[in-house]
Length: 186
Image (cartoon, rainbow, N blue to C red; front, side, top):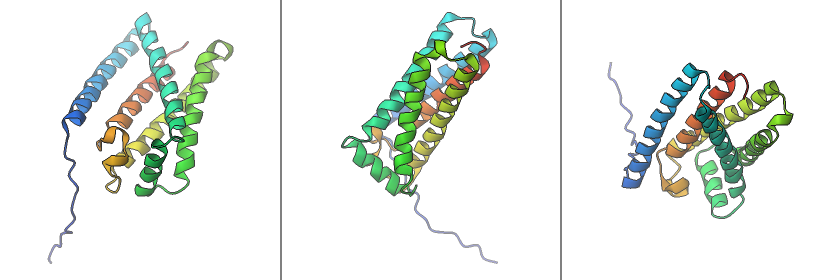
């Protein structure tokens, strides 16, 4: 019985110096974040600096998501985003859902962070936890788009094919979501 091999070409990603440096930065930051997270859980958030970091990460995610969602209405981001959706074969519904998701998650986090004192702790944790989970799902989709062979680097952020940016946001959202779940009184 003969074994037939498919003769397929696998596109090789040619690393550029900037993407390698950016990748090393993301890897270093991820290692720092993991170490910080482990220490924070062991110390049960007694350190004030850890709470400051949590607040900064939450605000950063809130502002970034809402800004990135709004930017998709402006040229050239609008064109790049539509090409990403069409080339990655996600379907026409992914275009409005992606924009609406980013804006809604960003605004939801901004509202929660601004009116935290008026929201019960359990409601705050539920809403922010869902928002961080939504960011994780969007970033998994972003990683899929970056890795899709039909999507060219010309339509990706910073023209970088490896998914460093969505991976960074995914790690940040996952760690912040874990903080939200582990902390009793945020």
